[in-house]
Image (cartoon, rainbow, N blue to C red; front, top):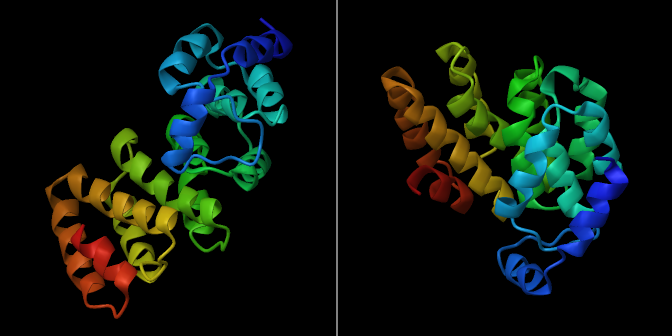
Length: 210
């Protein structure tokens, strides 16, 4: 199936009721928005898993759900640093950020590098991507040593003053997922949360106590 055919199918599934509902949950992309749920998109993606060329075409369409579909079918082994940077700059909603950082980027060889870099960036969804990537790697990358996640904790503390909704929620998510990984990281995450709670920042206190 070609990208053109898939896009036509996506447009046939446009759901105005879902669009309104998704907007209430903060899904407000600047691109074309069809209101198709992830439960509908996953079966569409299944026959096209690890189709890098198709993923690139779908992403280039600019359609929100086509980009989510691209995340579901992309082959992490073929993603370059340049592509990762292009995609992250296109993030305009928390759900596309979370799908790419959950389905694709945890598995690229430069995942840790990008997580660290993106936490230093100002754009809200780029910065969110860095912390979502930390959270997702904590769950999905069983091969990584504890040291990788211990290195994330000072970054979490450093950025815990950021009170933007989608950033602070991602920081909290990363801290919690790191703490759930094993007993050693749990102790380290609790200690970090206690340190964050002492920072004179409403966002930091929320991150530490949520």
